[in-house]
Length: 289
Image (cartoon, rainbow, N blue to C red; front, side, top):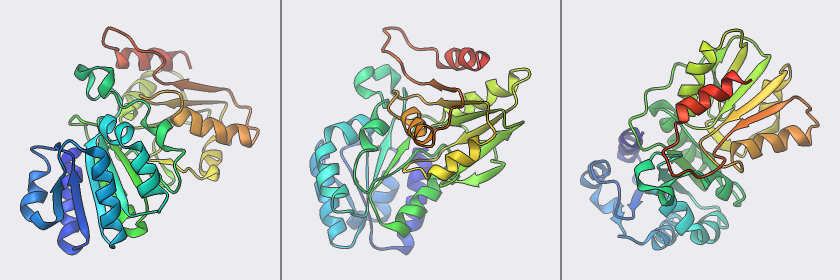
């Protein structure tokens, strides 16, 4: 995902001299290609994420389209005040690219988990939140940002995620449908948990379901969710995130429209000392649906 991001950014920067990239002493082996191609539009601010966001805001006020890159925990949690006040409040063209969604940095421990970021950012003014799972969707997010020129947060996995299966239909803004064996059960996914959900849902005998990836996480148009669930007898969300993420976003829409369909959720419930076997947990959850 990181390689897909930088490759697409370089392509776009060749045709747009207003594109800049900032990093806070991270991204080695990925960002050098941009630095070499556009040295005058690349800044490594050092270990200073808060300053990075303020510099990005200043560049955006001068008409630049700015991408900032860091690990999710440093980017979102350490620089939240600057994101809120400098970027979002002024509705500036800054795309914040956070790497390490979910447990991508599992060996580094809880300090590096990206499991609260959607919940933290979805309350910010003017902010679009995306969680693409493959190079095509990553390219789409970059294109949306360059066209809309508004605050954007794009969360990426750290590892070499497989290419997503070809979607049956959909888009980043309406959701991608990856499997449709019936509308009795609707499964909404956030991030690369999609791959395991597809695998285990297909293997469960008798489960007629529709699997949807919400690449654009927030804000969601209510009608998109309502259209997907109108014939459902069960609804579930899957995310490697705390309960304030996709579960919260979808449930608010369902409650506000008085949808009484049984609703289930798979998310990070507690911290554990031992590594969490996510695949086993997801499979067990799907078997209970």
